[in-house]
Image 1 (cartoon, rainbow, N blue to C red):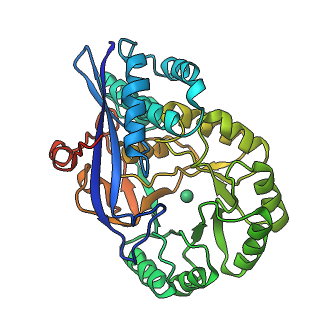
Image 2 (image 1 turned 90 degrees about the horizontal axis):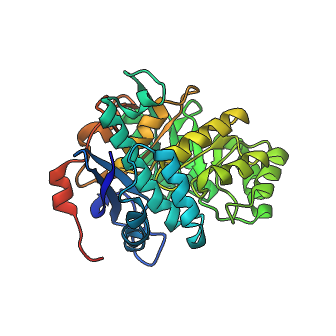
Amino acid sequence: MKIAAVEAIPLEIPFQHGGKPFGWGAEAWTRLSILLVRVTTDAGITGYGEAFSYGCRRAVQAVVEDMIAPLAVGAQAGDIIALNRSLQQKLHLQGRHGLTIFALSGLDIALWDIAGKAAGLPVHRLLGAVGGKSIPGYASLFRYSDPELVAERCHAAVAQGYRWIKLHEIHLPEVAAARGALGEDVPIMVDTNCPWTPAEARRQALALEPYGIHWLEEPIFPPEDFASLARLQSETGIALAAGENACTAFDFHKMLAAGAVTYAQPSVTKVGGISEFVQVAALARAHGVEVMPHSPYFGPGFAASLQLAAALPEGALFERLYVDLEASLYGDLVDAAGGEFRVPEGPGLGADPDADVIAAYRVSDA
Ligand SMILES: [Mg+2]
């Protein structure tokens, strides 16, 4: 079975986050980009992947179309790990991080979807797990920079059944408000997205101590400063999580060897797809580090992360970005029931994205 076509399908779906306008770039973030990678084979099987595209949709689409597709078409669809390795080698001049590996991730996920469909099995069973699982989720709150709003959103998430909450705040009053709202029994994670120098991070980590943080995520810039993360963790005793900015298992090898984290967070749409994620999980296991998938996604990245979480023998918490989308590619699969996400049992990623939603939210500005 050979790869017949690789197509990038850009979607933008409006969402609400319940706070003041906020964005990482020049504009407020109001629509989620989902770059689908649709792969068809000469056997008539179609697979869907997702390449990370927040803030870089048109650029990643160009990488899929101009760099990935020409190399992938004609290759054996079932030789996924070898093809992933071969493309990494052929494209290493264009970078081992960022756009190149994001685009490759989309292809790899689609090929695993195809492998599952060819075998008649969901990916978690291909990876050696049984079916019938649910994964406990955590509500990954937007950044509100407003203690009252943080408390309000914490209450809302717990009322919906979530038993774990992650904040994206960088100031103490918001963390204190969350702890006040949730009491002592709900674990809180704090994701800061690389704001501090090592010295600032140390001060902040010590200041967070009274709030009993379950993990502190990405406190240091640059994210690949693994030596400083390791020093911060050992000197303060706070558990660190990182990995969404690491690409390929080779990056994680360095992170884990440095003793930088307690929780490794590979992101399936960024790390190099399911093939690289599986290698990261094995490396983490050998280092005694737990894997917590980074998965603020609503496309095939979401479905693939669920399949992978189901195949982690240590279990995992599943990240659910706590926003409301105007439309869902996977119906109610993206909604937690009693704080848990059901792992779908269909072949491949468990379900295909909704064709009507794709048609309604496809954009054509590339
Ligand atoms: Mg994060």
